[in-house]
Amino acid sequence: RETLLHVQTSETDISNIEDTPVVLFNENIEVPWQLSGLANVFEEPYDPEKNKLYLWTIPRCGSTSIRRIASHCLGLTMASEAGKGDVGGDSLQVVEGNGMKYVNVDMSNPNGIAHAKELGVGGWNKVDMVSSSYLYDGAGIFDPDHKGYMIAMFRHPIERAVSLFYNLKSNKAYAEQMVTLSTVEQYSRSSLVENNWMTRFLSNSLSGELTPEHEAIAKEVLRTKCIIGLLQEKVESMRRLEMLFDVKAEKSQRRYDCQEKLWYWDWPGKNRHEQVLEGSEAWNRLYEQNSFDIRLYEYARELFKAQGKLFQTSVTEE
Image 1 (tube, rainbow, N blue to C red):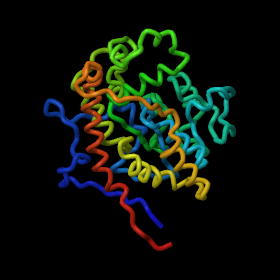
Image 2 (cartoon, helix red, strand yellow):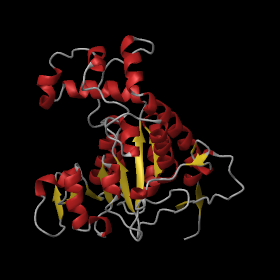
Image 3 (cartoon, helix red, strand yellow):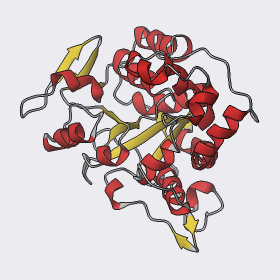
């Protein structure tokens, strides 16, 4: 059978990106203490008895597909926004509906996450995966004995911004705000356009001006705490995630058919639209709004290459 190999890094092997701490002004950057509940992915092998998979959801990057595959295809029990309609009471419950199992908590906002923490969702053995965009709040539900194992899917920030524009255009909740924004260029000039979303959430700086320190913190968090998936590398990304999912997932032909359909053929929420040309006015404005994130994305791509060694396979005797 296949087993996940974990490669320990040594003090003398510092030539690779995963072994090289992010440095700013000649000082190593430290991961903020609020993320101490997340495992160091190069130093702490994934242990399903102690860890819970923690999907940090970046909008328009394939996170919806990952959640649906984990829940609908693999039978994993989720703690996400799926339970927001069932929140209530002072105890955790597994709810079954819409072809999935989920917990009666709402991980889509800080107040909901705080309530989930009070109920002890981070250490509850019936939860297989946690999903939230609020990285720091979500990390707070874990503790040293039950650490979260962070995974995330990444996409080029300008492609993500364009996809978000078309998604907002089709979202009735934004109909009034989007009525005058018929093109990506108009959207790029508006107050609705995002500003370095990934860097802000990774550095816990959701407002205000970003600095090189915020960028350095974001990179160090990814280097130490996150298993990287790339939408541009769907096949290899899913192969790696499968090696984590397979520890707890049901194994059947139905599972594999379901998974292939969602990941390769029926990707939830996908929008078919024209791409914005590099060098165009829209591209340049979106670049200005996402310059930190673009550098961060390139760093994530290098980490993706380096993390391949964590997902080598070997054949062992039963």
